[in-house]
Image 1 (cartoon, rainbow, N blue to C red):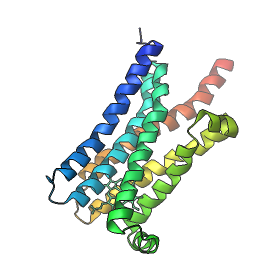
Image 2 (tube, rainbow, N blue to C red):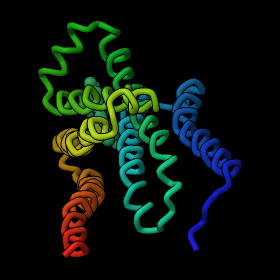
Image 3 (cartoon, protein in one colour):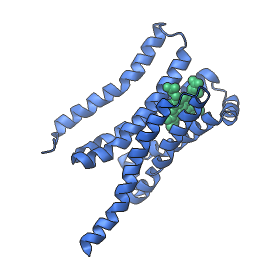
Image 4 (cartoon, protein in one colour):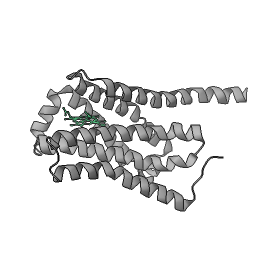
Length: 209
Ligand code: HEM
């Protein structure tokens, strides 16, 4: 039988995930302030970029995992995981805006427009903002479930844009192994959703007929 946590256990699981999700940030801060890094800016930009992608994949994995294991309570972790993807995207963007451009909006936009791989990442980040803003229960109520679900389908655009950004960045070094692996992971996670949503009406129709 599938494991179902009690409300107290669920709170414990959420607290543990919350703390674990902050470990990469704590590590980056520690390595930077203790002077252990040769290139702290590069390390933080890449580190935060990696964690955006990890959290996007973990968040996208919740629904397939829930379906396969029948552990419906997993859905209660999805919002927090998605918000951590946004949190690391915000830090990733701020590292670029602060340390690369010293909060100069004009030079930042010029750089974004000049380097296509950054433009693609920037678009993905901008598209993540409405998802983060509408993640509260009050916003779900205000929008209505159907509209909220449509809006959150932006993830079908955001995740591939994140992969394209990563791929393009690595193109300069002809190092495609990691972008390829993450591309396959994202394709499987999004593909599973498409497959399930297409096969559902057929299953209902078959049951009805
Ligand atoms: C959903 C949004 C985004 C995702 C998933 C993402 C992901 C990544 C990943 C995985 C890397 C490479 C890390 C590595 O080499 O290990 C990276 C690098 C980078 N990203 Fe992003 N990114 C996003 C948004 C942005 C935004 C908004 C900007 C700036 C406007 C940006 C600027 C950069 C830069 C400058 C690098 C490093 C390039 C280098 O070191 O040569 N990214 N990003």
